[in-house]
Length: 160
Image (cartoon, rainbow, N blue to C red):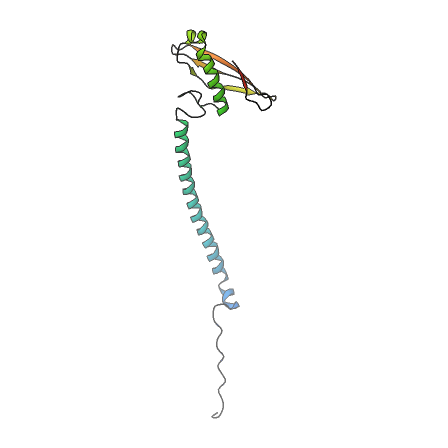
């Protein structure tokens, strides 16, 4: 009719943010979220793996350089074998000093003396016993036995 007022048009609600739109695209959101998570984990994992390889190669290089150094702190003499601990190297160094100044040893083996690896056993009371092979330039092989006693935190006394 001619004099009637047209009803005011009700605006349509926005498509985003309505429950109907979320319900219709629920599986799409789940797939997108899971896919994004998987891709993120793969990228992070790849980065961590490459970083770990880089770090490991750096450590290996430093370890090779250090262990192959003739003056490593765990070597009793320059170019000698690596001892298990620095304390073992100190004991072997002291024993080599005693052995190399002993006239009987130098007459029997010659100079210079070369030491082998120190094999030690430690008891509960702080006493350590061990031995290592000694080789002279003529090829003669001997054995040096060490007994170290550590009395209550003091420096070990070395008997050879």
